Amino acid sequence: MLRKINLLILGLLAVFVTGCSEDFLETTPTDSIAEADAFASVDNMFLVLNGLHRVMYAQNPISGGTSSRSGQSFYMPALDAMGGEMIHSAPGNGWMTSELRWLTHTNANFTTVNNFWYMRYHIIATSNNLINLIAANGYPEADADVRNILGQAYAYRAWAYHQLVSTFAKGYLIGTPATDPGVPLLLVTGAPFTSEGRATVQVVYDQINDDIAKSITYFNGASDPDNKSHLSINAAHGLKARIDLTQGNWKDAADAAIAARAGFPLLDESDWLSGFNTVDLSEVIWGGTVIDSETNYYQSFFYFISPTFNGSQNRSNPKLINKEVYDAIPSTDFRINMALPLAPNTNSSASNGEGGSYETDPNYDSSDEFWDAWEAIITKYGMTTGHNTHPYMAVKFLQKNPGTIDPDDVIYMRASEMYLIEAEAKAMQSDVTGAQAVLQVFGSSRDTAYDSSIYTTKDALMEHIKWQRRVELYGEGFSFHDHIRWDEGIDLTNSGADDNLYRDGFMQAKPSLNDAWIWKIPQDEIDANPNLTEADQN
Image (cartoon, helix red, strand yellow):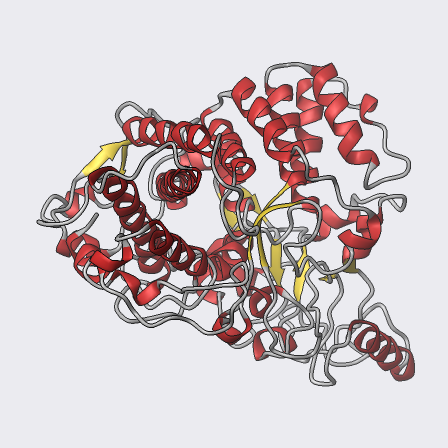
């Protein structure tokens, strides 16, 4: 794509390529290799793919030399914070404060929009190379490894374009896809590195649908993925389920979700509460296997979201679950243990003004009671004595080695999401019985008293499914785009968020009435792309 990113990436592709042995677990990255060498053999193309796996989570100086928004490690928690599900308890050290206030994605000059855009176009440019140069070099498509590479490349390209068009264009179900401007669509490789104008939303989705269909086709007969960092046929089905759900292709979404979760059993209570810090969990379909020597450290996923990570973002700003969502969890549902509603508010800078001592925290009557409760939490979860606690703080994401800056894996797709996609798709088809059935399987795995039969209408089912997504997928990056798909605004009045901290992010009208949900195209792109002008800006 894009003159700027093509010149940067296609000429020096392997700046981001990491060579690995022992199933991608070697801890030392390879040196950079030239583009011609990167595509000179099937083995080298796997190294290119390994670079993409790393780009998904690691520090990526892709745009302007900055790594300050590091892949999904940043954008997953940011999107949940902007969507009102992951609540910040205090300004902390400033990270994501502008995102909470809906300032960054509405400003074309912010790093947030730049890195979101250019990271995904980097993935597209690299995928284009893999797809086109396999054909140009005459690699046999019947070869299992070649099919694996093509399956992953088409899936990556589908994922990247779906992320872009879902974020920089009007939602498919609330807009007019045939005429709404989407994002630039480019599928070619190499010189002259010319850019494109904005294709319509429908044209972009047509390409996404074609890419994910080809991905699934190539994965049939492909070699097995080395590990869960690699995209697989299950992950491709999962991406298809997401893509179909966004378009309202309900039956296809349900079918793809069923295929995606095959072989990935739901977590039991012990595993669900173990911290979501490893791709080895049975439900994980796709996730980043983080290599110790190549982690983000203070830009890692767990830095932004985990109460145990030893960073200033977490010590001073424990992340909360939306109070309204949490209070609806029944006592028979083990996910009630994902947050601590009575944790003492120890931070004197807490945004709700109730932090610092028992005298300001309404849940405690004495200093001893207040600090004993804090000490019990610190001890149980392995935090440091510098960590603050706060009512409704989430303890879903816990490090393997708490109280450190050690890296942990990043999870992109789980079987639970697929159950909830199937349930939503069936509910939207008014298949009440079908939605109840899939919800019963999912819900009873979480709640010993679960009974889906009480949800007897499409509307009741949808309200319950929305709540289930907010609980089950908390912190996994879905809420912002869920609001767009459901055409729901944001009102954090009873969430536990502070309106002075959140400002514009505290309340937003629904997306069909509010173009602030559509991200600004980076100004760098407007300036550099000869096929875009200020008139193309959102």
